[in-house]
Amino acid sequence: MPKQSSNRVKILIVDDHPVVCSGLTSMLSAQQAIEVIGSAASGEEALVIIERECPDLILLDLRMPGMDGIAVLNSLKLMEKAPRVVVLTSFEKEEDIYRAIRAGARGYLMKDTTESEMVAAISIVFGGKRYIPRHIAARLADRMMRSDLTARELQILEQLAQGSTNKQIASTLEISDNTVRHHVNSIMEKLQVSDRTEAVATAMRSGVLPGTD
Image (tube, rainbow, N blue to C red; front, side):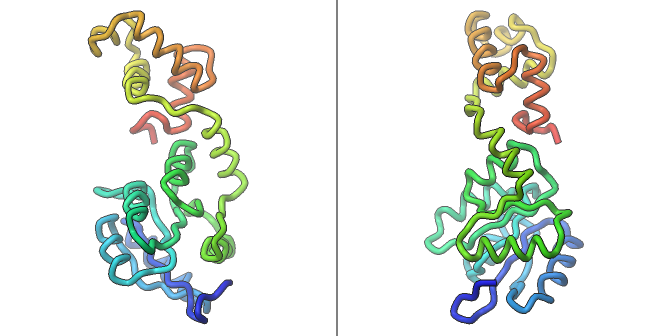
C-alpha cells in the first residue's frame, strides 16, 4: 500500500450502524498500513471530524438519516484539502452509483465485499486512482448512456408510476395534455424504452424514482 511521509493511511468510517463501524474498525485496524482515526454516525458529525482530524480517506455510507452520503460528498468539494472517498453501501442501483461518482466518490464498494478487496480499494484510491468493481462499472456505464431527466419529467414519471393518465397528470400539474405527451415521449427516449409501463419499470429498477429501494 502506498505510504505518505511514511505514515499510515488515516481513515474515517462514516455509517449510522454501530455494528458496521465496529466491525470495519476492528478489521482495518489489523492492517499495518491503515490507521482508523474514528467513526461518525451521520454526515454532519463526519464533516466536523474531517475538519478537525484531516483523514486521508473516508469510507462513506450513502443512506443515513439527515445528511446523506451524497450531501457529504458535495460538502467535501468546498474543502481545500478534502479526503478521498470510497463509498461503502448496500445499494447498487444505477442511480445511486451515478450520483455518488458524479459527486466525487473515487471508489464504490458493496458492504458484502471481501476484506482483501476493501484493502486493495483503499490502497488504489489512496494512491490517486479510482476503484470501481467491474459489475458496478457496468451499471454505471448503463446509467451514463441515459440523459438526465428534468425536474418536470421526474414529476410526470412519479405520476405515471401511480397509474395516472395524461389527462390526470395535466390536471394535477396544471399543464396541457400536449405538454404532458411531449414530456412522456422525452422520458421514454431518455430511458431508452418503448412505452410508459416500461419507463416506470426501468426507473424503479435503476433507482431513478425516489423511494423505490
